[in-house]
Image (tube, rainbow, N blue to C red; front, side, top):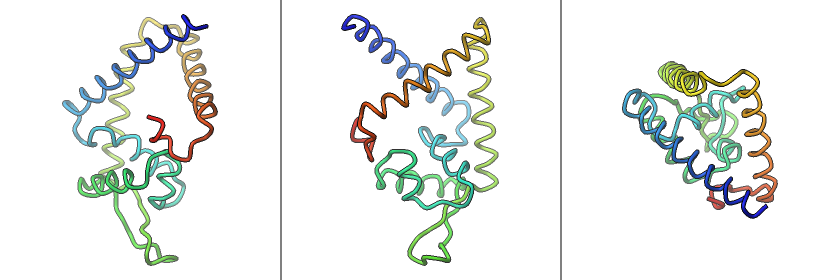
Length: 155
């Protein structure tokens, strides 16, 4: 298992490098969403109602201060709107703006085209197997880390 673990570690390192390359390329050709913030923007968009930054931090596994800075950047780019929570005037509710929706659509269409190109020679069964294995792997990593409230500390 030790050799297999090393081999998996090497493949994961290559995967992380590939993800960085994709993110950098997207930032160059599709700068609508600042680098590293598309996932957070998607988390806000997926929330059934407007969400609080603390909920966003909990769902994303990021430190609240990191989320606060990221939200400020998304707001400054006009992708997210911050409104006072009528139930708690000290808190803000976050919602994706129409510009944010358009940027998300463009970003994920672009990612979809990159993945379609990269996986063009894969069978649908291979793509499904990879998706299933990655889903299981990420869940198992969270379990192995003991469901850290702050996964950022594990980085």
